[in-house]
Image (cartoon, rainbow, N blue to C red; front, side):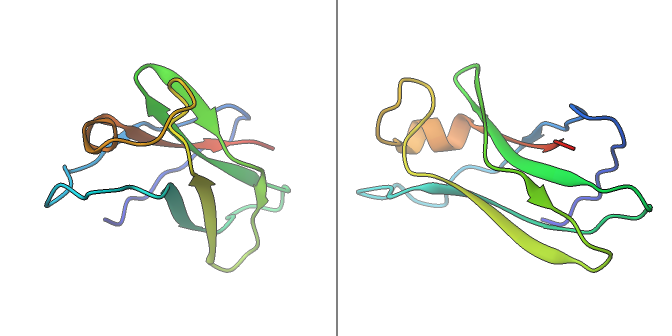
Length: 102
């Protein structure tokens, strides 16, 4: 789903809920936060593809932005809430939280 988020201060983030999985998978290999972003000012900017699971926040590496839209992904092979395998219930309950990192 396309969402426009704007942030200028390091640490600014938005929490986004997702719709539930359309069916219950037997296994979940990983969750990946995929973003397409661009910077709109002259300042160097970086994002983290973050998520919140069970009240635990996790953020991927810094992804430095350019003046053109670029795709960035932050994979989470394990649920950061306990460092355990993902379950369908955990995926259905997670929130995505892109954050201004730099």
